[in-house]
Image (cartoon, rainbow, N blue to C red; front, side):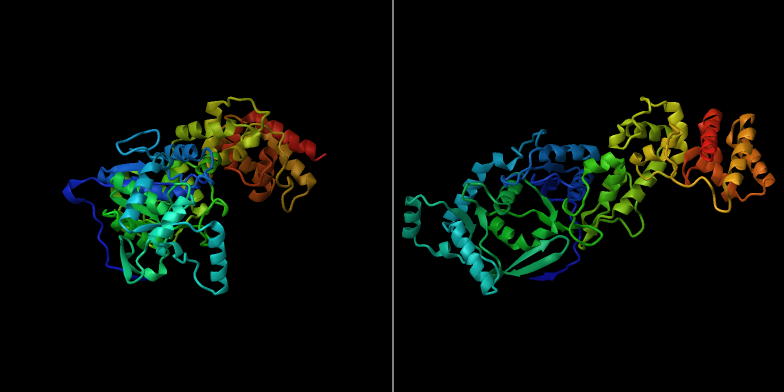
Length: 506
C-alpha cells in the first residue's frame, strides 16, 4: 500500500447545487460507548453547517450479535447530546427503510447483478473446508485469504452444486493483477496491490449481506454524498471502490476519521473501560460539555481554542481539519471541561440541574435516605453557592455538601490539629461556642472578624484554630471558606456541631 498526500482542499459545494447528505450507520451489536458518538457528531455538524441532511441508518445485518435495546439506547443518547435526525428510524424519509434487515431483497438483487456481470461468484465452500484452509495457511505462514477455488468452477460444476442444493455465499471477484488507487479526502491517494486483497464475501449463505455490499447499495440509493467512517476501514477501501465501480456508481467523498483511543493509545471500547452516555449522565456530566469535548476528539479549529458553543461549532466545523492521527479520549480532560461548564451556570440553573442528583436515592449517589425530600430549594441554593467553583460533575454535589443536611457523619479527619492536644482543642471549642452563642449579626464578615480576634487572643495559628472549628462543624479537612460555611449552616446547627465535637473529647 502506498499513500500520496495532495494537500486536500475541502469541497463545500456539490455539482448542481446539491446539498450534502451524510449518514451515521452504527451496528447495534452492543450499547455504544461515548466515543462512538464522535463520528456521528462530525456528520451532524457538517450537515448542519451546510444545510445538508443527517441520516441515521441501522446496520443490523450481524444478527447473531445484535443486542436488544441497543438502537433505543443509541437514539436516546443522540437526543441527550442534542443531535437531531433528518431521516432514519422513527423519523422516516424518502429513502427508507433505514434498517438494513428490512432491505434484504435489495442486496440480493444487486448481488445477483454483480454475478451476472462477472464481478462476483457463488462460493460453495463449507465452513469446515475454509477452516482447514486457514490452518494450512497458518502452518505455511501465508496471509489468511480465500484460495478462490470456487471462482474457477465450470458452468457444469456450478449447476451441479445448485442442483444438489448446496448452500453458497457470494464473493466479489477482485482483479488478480495491477493496483487500485483510492482517494481519501483526509489521507490523499492510497494505492493497493490487487493481489493482496481477498475475494471478500458480499452475501452470506443466509441471504444477509456483509458491510462490503450493504453500505454501497444503501449509500447509493440514499444519495449519500460524504462518507465519514473509522480509519479501520482503510484496508477495505480498495475492495469497496471496486464494488462501487462494478455496480456502475460514483462513490461519495470518503473521510476516514482517526480511531478514538484511550490514554494508553489502545482503541477505545466498552471492554477497554469506555463510559456510555448514560453513565456520564448518571455521574452528572452536562450534555453541552460532552458535546464540546467530543468535537475535539480528532478535530481542532486551531491550536488553542477549546470551548465552543453548539452554534460556534456548527459555524466553524470543517472536514478538512479532521486529524489523521489517533484521537485521545481523556477522561480527566472531560471532567475538567465539565467543571468549567458548571462554573458558567447561573446559581439558579446550577441548583435546578443539581437537585435531581442530590434527591436521588443514597444507593444511586444521592444524599442519605434519612434526609427528607424534596430539599429546601432556597437553602440548597445557598449551599451550592459555596461549592460552585469546586464541582467537576453534578453527581459530586451530594457528597460534597452532605454535612450541610445532617450531622451524624463520621469524622473524615482527626479533630485535634497538629501542635494541639485534647485540652487546647476543648478550649478552642468552648471559647468559640461562647462567642458564637451571642454573636450578632450572623454573617460571614462579622463571623470572621470576631473569630480571628479570638484566635489572636488564644495565640494560635490559623491552621490550628480555624482547622479545629472546620472539622468540628463539617467532619472534613477541606471545605468551602469557613466563615461563609458557618453563615449558611446558621447559629443553631453550628452550636450543636460544636457540642457534638466537645462530647467526643470526653
